[in-house]
Image 1 (cartoon, rainbow, N blue to C red):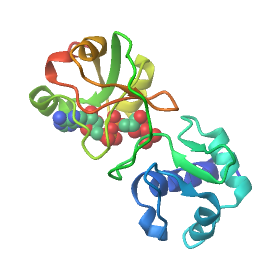
Image 2 (image 1 turned 180 degrees about the horizontal axis):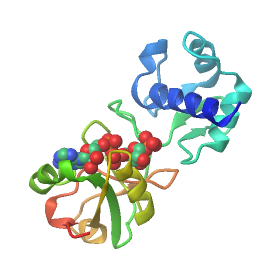
Image 3 (image 1 turned 90 degrees about the vertical axis):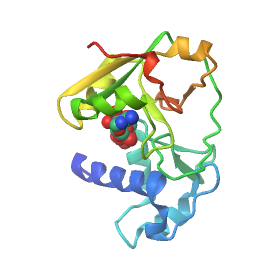
Length: 182
Ligand code: HQG
C-alpha cells in the first residue's frame, strides 16, 4: 500500500468506527469495539481491506486513531466519535493549566456567545500542544487558536479526560475559561 491507499483506508475506518458502522451493517459494542473478523468481512462490500493492511493502517496512523484490544480480536477508534453513547472507559484526570483549541474566525461569534460545544462529536477536543491546535484549525482555513484555562475548569468541578492517543476531552468549555486573544 502506498501512502494514499493507507489514507483512504484510514478514512474508511474512521467513518465506520466513529460515525457510521451501519453502512456495512456492522454493530459496535457499548465501548465502541468492533469484532475484527466481522469488520474485515463486512468491509468487503465497500473496500478491499486485509488483516495485514488493517495492521499497517493502525500502526502507521499519524494520530494513533485506532486501537486493538489485547488479543487483537477487537478494534475501536480512540476518540472522535459522533455515534452516541459510546463509553470509551476513560478516567477523569487533572488537566494541565492550559489546553488549546484550533478553530476559525467564522465560528468565533457563536463560541463567544455559547462557549466551546461538542457540536457533532461526543466531546470538545482540546490539545496540550499549541501546534496541534494550529493543525486542527487549519483543516478549515486560517486557524484561530484559543487558550483554555483548563486547570481552573477542573478546580470548578468540570471534568476532563485524555484519550489513549493523547487528545483532551471535556463536555463543553464555558466562555469565561476561554482566552480569546491570540
Ligand atoms: C467549532 C480531527 C460554533 C469548533 C481534529 C470546530 C481534531 C463551534 C467545530 C478532532 C462552537 C467542530 C476534532 C460553537 C465549537 N459555535 N462553532 N459554540 N463550539 N465549535 O471536527 O475540534 O482527524 O467536531 O471550533 O484533528 O475541529 O478526525 O471538532 O471548528 O483532533 O482524528 O465547531 O477531529 O481529528 O468540529 O476537531 P469538529 P474539531 P481527526
